[in-house]
Image (cartoon, rainbow, N blue to C red; front, top):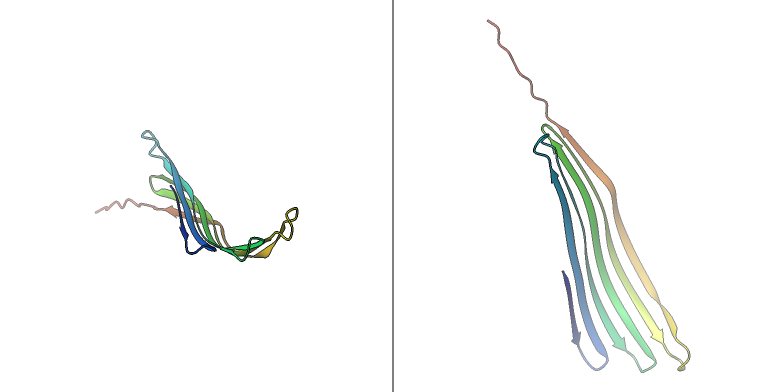
Length: 137
């Protein structure tokens, strides 16, 4: 799913909001063996951008960006289950200037900060052991 909204605050200011959300899942189940697994993955992102014109030769874009990607694998058979998860979450802020001193020159400069949060792999295993007790008298 995609969405985009823009709003003109004034002759020199515009605000843009856009987003994307996508998830997919692959499932498998064997009736013969009771084995089943599930693989979900997806990405979500959102961007808020403010564009300001200082003059016809200088403008700036200020953006705040969020991105979240994850992947998982879940498997189960009778009393055994196995789960893994990986993900990357980013928070980003940036300011980009474009300056046109003359018609044949374009100078770009700015600042960018990104905070990455990695979950390389987290794993979980569960085994349930059942014991049969026999009473002898």
